[in-house]
Amino acid sequence: MTNQPTQKQLAALQQFANTNGRTWKSALRHAWETGDYPPDCYVEHLQQVRNTFGPSWLVRFTLPR
Image 1 (cartoon, helix red, strand yellow):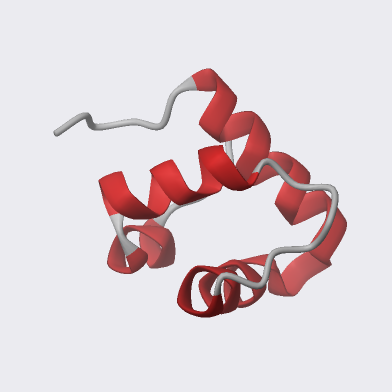
Image 2 (image 1 turned 180 degrees about the vertical axis):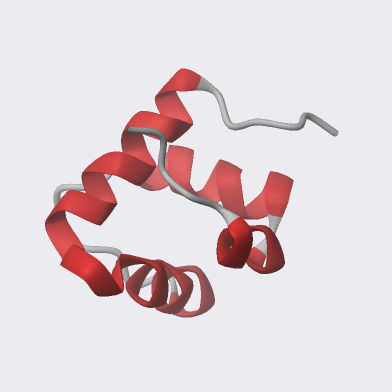
């Protein structure tokens, strides 16, 4: 298992966070659980993050500055 998301995965996470504001992690977790993603996001990369790292990883994750 890899320790860090790829650059494309990080870019998808950053875009999702920018779109969803300060509650982006909650919104992403909801999208992961329901498959209901907003229209302009990189679903493939966000799904890769879920499949590779999982929801518990998301709780501890902080976007790089």
